[in-house]
Structures are given as structure tokens and as C-alpha cells.
Image 1 (cartoon, rainbow, N blue to C red):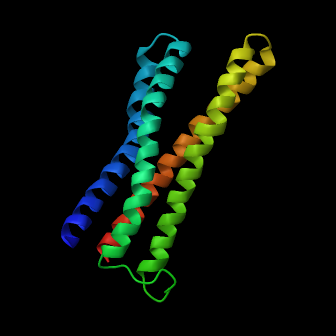
Image 2: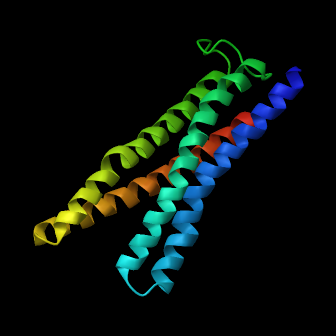
Length: 168
């Protein structure tokens, strides 16, 4: 039974990671550049990206939940788990770094989704009335894209730290 729980947890943990970091990878390195190149106008590109975000965000939210559920299961059943307060082994501090990176990713993800994106939407509606708002919307959109890039970099670091953990 332990093997089944551990195997299923590993599978779900990896799948959630692929959805989240792979989704960021696809958006930043494939979809966005392709849309900018092939679509004729920035408003069409923005509409496409809004639709992709609308579809991807719930999958990422579920992935975060799956990671939160499967992580402790992997820690409990995994062979490397010791008391998280025992800093004399190599595993605990490295896992702490990994968790700090993941928490940073979660904060960025939900900040964008719950605060930044709605603010951009509200200001975009009003932007036609005031030219200064158009400039503010553009700055917020750039911030949002930079946060996605930051999450991608953090995600790559999480994968690197995981590789180090798996190698020990």
C-alpha cells in the first residue's frame, strides 16, 4: 500500500509541476512570441493571451493544490525525510530553499491573478477616456509579464534544486 501511495503521489506531484512550469514555458517561449509574430495587431494578441490565461490559470491553481497535498505525503513516505528541524543533514536546508522558491512562485501567481490582472482589466476599460491611463495600463501589463518571467526563473531554480535533492 505504501508503494502505491508513494507512486501515485510522485506521479501527481510531477504532473502538477509539469502543468505549472510547463505552462509558463509554453506561454513565454512558444505562444507569446508566435502570437506577436503572426497576429496582425497587439489587441488581437492581447485577446489571445487573455483567453490562454483564462484556461491555464485554473489548471495552475489545481496544480498548486495538488503540490500542497502530495508534498507532505512524499515527505512522510519518502526515504530522505527526517525531522524538518534537523539541520545537520544535507537534505533539510536544500528542501527549505526549494520550499522558499515555491512559496515565492505561489505568491507571485496569486498576486497576478487576484490583484494585478483585475486592476489591469478595470483600468483598460477606463483607458479610452484618459490617455494617462493607457500608459499606466501598459506599465502594469509589463509588470505582469515580468512577474511571469520571474516565476519561470523561480520554476527553473525549483527544478534545479529538485535535481540536486534527487542526486543525493
